[in-house]
Length: 151
Image (cartoon, rainbow, N blue to C red; front, top):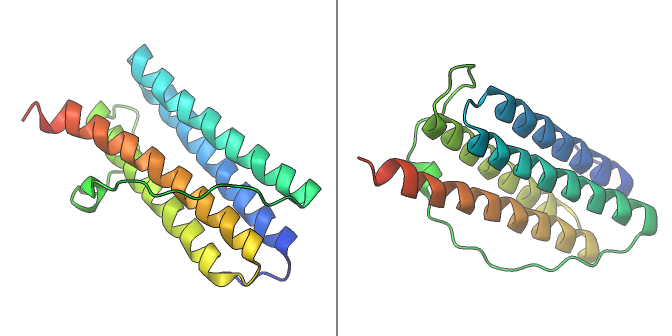
């Protein structure tokens, strides 16, 4: 993992990761044929924009005031095969892709929280990890409802 020289470098890295998530969900939404599914992914893109804005505010104001909570993990993403994005992607595949993306983001923020000695920043990264785990849980619940119940 990259070594950071300052809190600002860490926050810049996290904001870049959030922008990548925005781009990912926006691109995924564009590939979906169903308006409802498209809207779900656009909603996730908006949430990632909010994460990025929160990080920008923290960087500018130096105020680290995010809450950390516990989120249930269904671990469905641990048992599904990774999927590559495609133009003709099925909804179930898009959900798997999204679960894996959120799991990776969770791991990233967890690792960043473990690498900092600044208590306030540790709390920020733990809170961001929680947000990503909430996204993953929503995708897992949708996968459970949409895919597993049909089989």
